[in-house]
Length: 223
Ligand SMILES: Nc1nc2c(ncn2[C@@H]2O[C@H](COP(=O)(O)OP(=O)(O)O)[C@@H](O)[C@H]2O)c(=O)[nH]1
Ligand SMILES: [Mg+2]
Image (cartoon, helix red, strand yellow):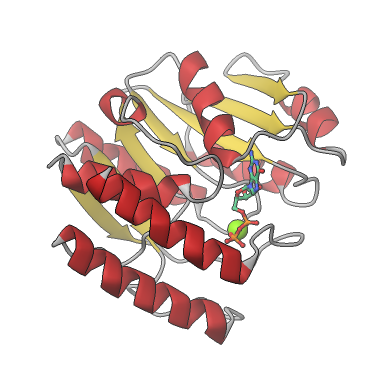
């Protein structure tokens, strides 16, 4: 089945092209939607160049609206029933997208690439490792369902999932989505993936993010 891959980016001039090339190579036939979220670096001009083939489109927000809004801009343009999302910083393996898509074809509503079931990636900070272990632990209790990676950016899902209500604007969107999918008893599955070190600087503010992710899980579960 055909599917659409959304690649949101905010100031990702260092990793974007490499991410795109791997996504393109590993997913022949897929529609690729690049969304620039008001970047101030060369992201938009790189996107315009990458969108010259007929399977790829580039969209742009004039101002930074957050990752959740960038993904939603992509959803609106996607022409397939199955969608996948991947970050533009070269951390996630695009070669795993077909595996996630296959799960949706088999009847799952959302398949996520879990980064931590095979141990933590090389160079991963201990602070983040602990936050992710605790985050997955508490999320699993709150949702009464085992989740090993709450915030992963590598996902595939069907259109139904894009219509779920959410208030998250930025990186907390994924956590809210996981909670919402499980709370609504949609079919959720994890696939173990291996990640790599990022190109360019992380946009995540550690302590603020831990808090917003936690609130997002509670909102997804109870709001
Ligand atoms: N569209 C959009 N994407 C963002 C924004 N902030 C971060 N991202 C993207 O979200 C992904 C994850 O952010 P990142 O900084 O890598 O966080 P980390 O993986 O937790 O270190 C990356 O692909 C970023 O480009 C934003 O404001 N808007
Ligand atoms: Mg990243």
